[in-house]
Image (cartoon, rainbow, N blue to C red; front, side, top):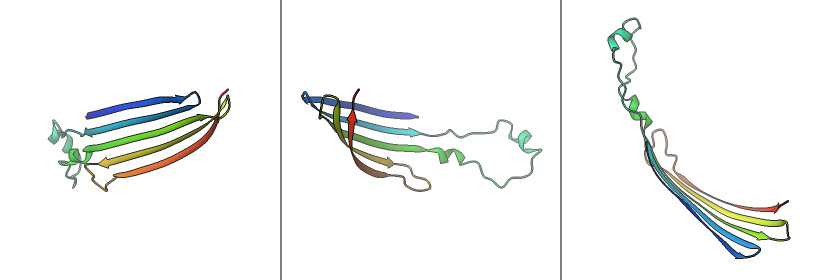
Length: 119
C-alpha cells in the first residue's frame, strides 16, 4: 500500500469574539493483494472434488486506487461571555480511480449552523 497524504489548517482571530479557520486534507492511496499460489497444490486438491472456480485472477480484484480532497471553512462568533454561534461549510471530492463493480466517485458539500454554550 502506498499513500500520499497532505493536511493543514489555518486559524485566525479576527477580533476577540470572531475566529475563522480553514482546514484542508488530500489523500492519494493505492493498494492491492499479491497473487497467491498453493505451494503443494496437488496435495491440497487431491482429497477435494473438482472445482469450477478459476482463482488465477482473484488477486486483481483487490486493487484500490482512490483520491480524496476535503476542505472545511468555519467561523465562530461569540455572542455572550459563554455562548457562541458556529458555522461551517465542508466540501469533499472523492475519486475512485480503479472502479470494479461501480464507480464510487462523487462530491458532497454541506453546511451547518449551531449555537453553543461553554461552561
